[in-house]
Image 1 (cartoon, rainbow, N blue to C red):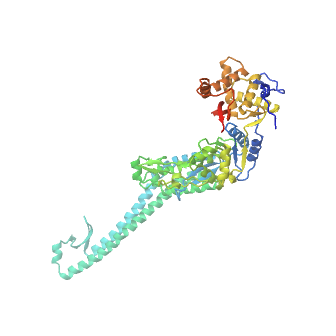
Image 2 (image 1 turned 90 degrees about the horizontal axis):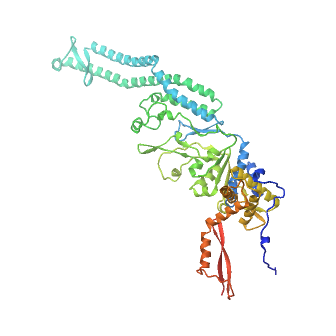
Image 3 (image 1 turned 180 degrees about the vertical axis):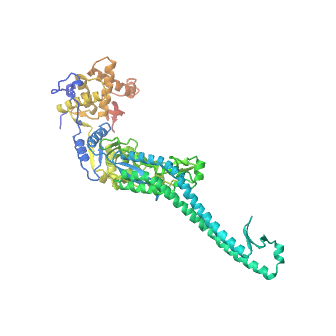
Amino acid sequence: MTETRELTAEELYQETKFDRLSFETTADLEDLDAVLGQPRAVDAMEFGVGIGARGYNIFALGPEGTGKRSVVSQYFEQRAAGGRVPPDWCYVNNFDDPHKPRAISLPAGRATVFRQDMDSLVEELTAALSGAFESEEYEARKQSIAAEFQERQSQSFEKLQEKAQERGVALLRTPGGLAFAPMRDGEVLSPEQIQNLPEEERKQLETEVEGLQEELQKIVRQVPGWQRSIKDALKDLNRDIAQFAVGGLIDELRQKYRDNDKIVRHLDAVQKDVVQNAQGVLGGEEEQGNVPAMLRGLAGVQQTGPDSPLMRRYRVNVVVDHSESEGAPVVHEDSPTYENLIGRVEHQAQLGALVTDFNLIKAGALHRATGGYLILDARKVLLQPYAWEGLKRALQSREIRIESIGQMLSLITTTSLEPEPIPLDVKVALYGEPQIYYLLYYNDPDFAELFKVSADFASDMDRSQENQELFARMIATVVRRENLMPFARSGVARVVEQSARMLGDSDKLSVQMRDIADLLRESSYWASQNGHGAVTADDVERAIAARIYRSDRVRERVQESIARNILLIDTREKKVGQVNGLSVLQLGTFSFGQPSRITAR
C-alpha cells in the first residue's frame, strides 16, 4: 500500500526561471513567430492547408480560448498571400429566359470595367437612338412608306370610281361609309327617281351596283393587309435605323471583350433586344421588361432614360469584385446565416407586389471566398436554419446555387429568380468545441467526407524550461501587439506561475490564450494606476486579487454562514459515519472550495 504524506508549501511551488533569457522587460525580447504549445494542431493545419484533394477541409477543435481561430487565420493568410487572385463574377440578363440570369467570369478587376462599359453603353443608347429616329432620312423614309400606302389605297378607289362612272354609278362617302348610287346627266338620282325608272333598267342598275359593291368589299378587305405591310415595313425601317445607330457602339465592346465568348454572346443578345425594343427605349408604349407601361406609370417608375426598367436589363451586376485583392481571399463570416453563406435574391415592393430582377442578386460568403479560404464558427453555422445543409450541398456539388428558403419550402409564391450556379473552389475551416466535432462525426454521415482534417488544440503544455522561455516571448508579443506596458522579469515570472495555477498542475502551463491575454491587460492597467514604468509581480498579483474580489461574493457569503454558525461544520472530535469533505464550486472563471459533510449509514 502506497504511503501517503503531507506536502510542504515548497513542494507545491515551482519557481519560474529564465536561464537562457537575459532581459529586464519584455521590450528586450523578440516576438514569438510560432504557435505556442500546439504541435499537433500545427501539423494538422500545415497538412490541411497544403493538400488540395477534395474533402480535405479543416475542423479546428479544442476548448474555448485556445486560439483556434487565430491559428487558422494565420495559416490561411500565409498561404493566401502567395496564392492567385481568383476571377471576378457578375450576373447579366438572360434575354431568352429572364428568370434565369447568366453568370459571367472575368479576370480580377475586369468585371467592374465591364459594368462601367455597359453603363456607358446604356447612357449612349438613348441619345444614339433618339438622334437616329429624329433624323431627316428616317422621316423621309417613313413618309415614303406612308405615301406608298396612301397611293395604293387611292389608286384602288380611283379605279373603282372610274369603273362606276362608266356604268352610270357614283361612289359616295356617307357617315356610314362608302356607298354607290345611280346617276343621270352627272346628277345622283333620288330614291323616288329610281323607283320611277323602268323595271328592266332599274334591275340593270341594281345588278351594276351589286357588282361594284363586291369589288368595293374586296378593296376594303385588302386594307388590313396593306396596313400590316406598312407596319412591317415600318418595323423593318425601325430595325434598320436602330441597327445602324447601336451597331457601332456594341461593335466596340465586342472587339474589347473578344477573348470572352460569353460576353460576346451577351452583346449579341443585347443588340438584338435593343433593335427589337427601339421604340420602348425611346419611351414607347410597349411593355418594358416585365412591367407593363400602365403599371410603371402608377408605380412611379421612370419609364425612359438610363434607369428605366427596360434599360436596367442591359446593365451588369458585379457580385464578386477582386479589383483591389492581393493573393487569394480569406473570408471570415461571423453571421453565417443561409443567405449570408449562399447568397440571396432581393425584392422590391411595387403596388403591393414584390418584383425582382438580376440586378438584385447579392453574393454570399462562398462567392467571396471561392478561389481562397473561408473560416466559420461551427456552433453559429449549426444554429442558423438550413445554413449547415446549404454549406454541405455547396461543398458536395462544388457549385454555389442561390435558392430562396421560402421558395424551397413553398412558403411564398412571389416570382423569384434561378441564377446560373457559380463554380466553387474553396478550403473551409470550421472551429468549435470537441463536443461539436464528435457529435457531427457520429451523427452526420456527410461530415467525415467533407472535413477530413481535424486540428486538435490542447489546453496545456509541459512546463519545461524551453516552454517557459517561449511563454515569455509570447507575453512580449501580446504586449507589443496590444500596446500594453512592458512586463518586468518578475511580472513575466508571475504570469507563468499563474498559468500553471489555472490548471492546478505545477508541471503544466495553460495555453488558453484568452485568459492569459486578459491577465496581461489587467496587470498593465494596475501598473499604470500604480505609476510603475513596467508591470511587476506585485501588479500581476493585484490584478489576480482584483479579479477574485469581483467574483467571490458567493464564497464570502458561504464563509460568513460558517462563521455565524448558520452552516454548521464540526472540526473537532469524531462521529461515526460522518466525515468532512471539500466541494469545489466553479462560478464562471472563479472556483473555490466549500466544506461539506459526508455521511454514511
